[in-house]
Image (cartoon, rainbow, N blue to C red; front, side):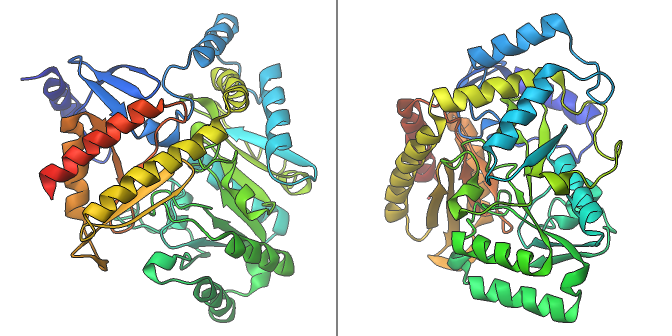
Length: 426
């Protein structure tokens, strides 16, 4: 029995079944966009810990920043005795977030917490209860976040009931025939049939859906949502948890639409692999919650704050937004060549920066998803030495999230391995 197999058996014996793992690959070390398992085998990483290590695994500058912080202290609780790094981080993020008006921040530990707190803040500010989300959206695994999530399997199945006053709209998706006009008409119908605008606290949307399949909301749609929210006194929450921190070629994907959200959730790429999340929003809105109403024991974890400050420097100094665009261009070109070779199996290749997707279908028919081939590609990829992730409401999308620091020659090597995978399977 291999070491990986042995560890998988040990894990299966003690871990709840609901916390599974995609592959029996147990990591020993990782550097930039490469991972080595406990048996010494090397893998090219197209997952980045699900868009977390945008700055690459084990970036030496982040390691040094965290080590220096650890020498001083690891935890005091920012809500009891805070520290300079959390103030500096908030100052930087409110300056970098879209919009020119005064903003404030709050820090928590996970993306789901950020979403929960954004909704809390919205309800406290508006004194309204309703929240509108979108089909295919993913906002986390806590109860309220699950309610907002628009994807049943595996996130919601068997876990209800969910909180009330949550409503879902179709997400504009030209590839699947959902127009902006249809989404906006559904919103109008919602206002006439289920909840009046005066009872809606917030609309939450991912500028690019993550788990939903890497579909991008057209900038014009986000602009129209902004106008509708302004018209009805509804807050617009942009969930930038997977899209943030240079992943799409801008620091935040919302910037492509040229709008200012009322609130923005962030996590994942914020701290280079250390647990940190936050909400940044307009100052008067952020101040709606009473003292003690926001926070958490590990909120603004000092080691994560040190890492996040270094991440922001790396993004600027190593020009990671430009590198994300270059990665996206390379990957789209290579994947489009594969699409031309396998048009009956690859329905669409799409990207915004280094948030890249390949949608798999049967017989060239967009309405016939191919989740079986998707699973097979992910599994065969591990065998070949490339780590891939799937996503999509229909389970038929391969998503590519390489670290933004990835050398292009290693990315090309990983795409060569993907070519071999497809040649073996189709």
